[in-house]
Image 1 (cartoon, one colour):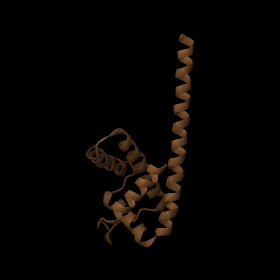
Image 2 (cartoon, one colour):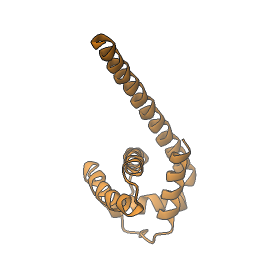
Image 3 (tube, helix red, strand yellow):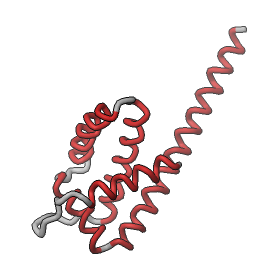
Length: 131
């Protein structure tokens, strides 16, 4: 759970320090931002788990961002500009948006845990049958 909040904070800080924001961009609606952020945080958690070296995580995440933006049919600049716009102009809405993101991540985590438990039980049953 700590890692989720760390990555959320890291994303906010890193994106807010960038100068992507311009007046000429397509503001992504909150529901689209939620979908994209859920996918980004899932991918970041997987990358942190999969790779030991920070450079490997960066390389993986670069590719992951491209895939996620393509999947959601958005431009990278629109996402980063929208994120920065929410930070500076709609922080309360961003807070609500992230409450949803955290809730979705928690649900997905619970689903994965339940699935893993079921697989573990099936493996255990198979081992007992073979004995």
